[in-house]
Image (cartoon, rainbow, N blue to C red; front, top):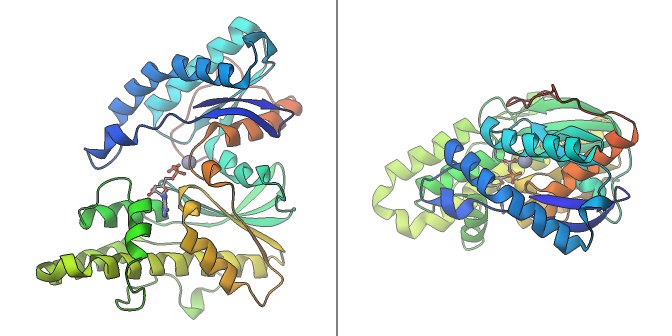
Length: 322
Ligand code: KG4
Ligand code: ZN
């Protein structure tokens, strides 16, 4: 993916090159295949983005690129390309933290949240709760101790034989089921953990696996109710922690970002749960929830504006450093 970004706000073009069709048959992302596909796609996507933005290469006066966390091989492709592009054109460039990019995705809304606000990043690799006090200050309040929220959707979809990625298929299936019929556990959500903003999804995933194993002869008739019961549990957990954090920090604005933020049932639940409070809920445009270049451009623009440039000796990183 690549894009051109005007004045830190206006998206001139945003091309997302998805590899979902390729990884679908393996039931998950295969890192080596992912980086090879990146090598094949990158210059094609860059050209597409330039053409769609109706600009020439000379008009580009800064480059932002994802530095990590993520899959090393794929990060390296984009990072090396951006370095070479900026070096050849003698323009500034900056490596951006992928997680900070997700936080910025909601700042591209027409009515973005105001500082300080709570931001829940729920994706395939992370479930992180942040207290965001300025464009550059992100304080982590809690994170998952095991699986990420999106990862649990992917794993349950696989158990139900629905393929990868699981979020969209589970949401669709859940809409046909009864969310109250099968009650799955909500780990770390008891009264005593009110102030604990950590998450845990592996116990919930195991409970679904045990249920499927016990009822394997009737699974086809129950798939929709299992999906609905599982989704209800995840959404209850996310909604509870986000709202508790908003109240504890005395914020007005709360937001969800990342691939799981696409889930409409999640937005509905949060809106319903804050009806009698002063909290206001924000979610990025659907096309900016999952991984995209616009959010990296938004974060990179602020860094470049402050003169925080990267150096040629800088490298990518695979693990969370935010
Ligand atoms: O942010 P993202 O595109 O990539 C990462 O940085 O991980 O998030 C991908 C995750 C996947 O686990 C996918 O199953 C989940 O987002 N997802 C959803 C939905 N659409 C995508 N989860 C729940 N409901 C959805 N509609
Ligand atoms: Zn992401």
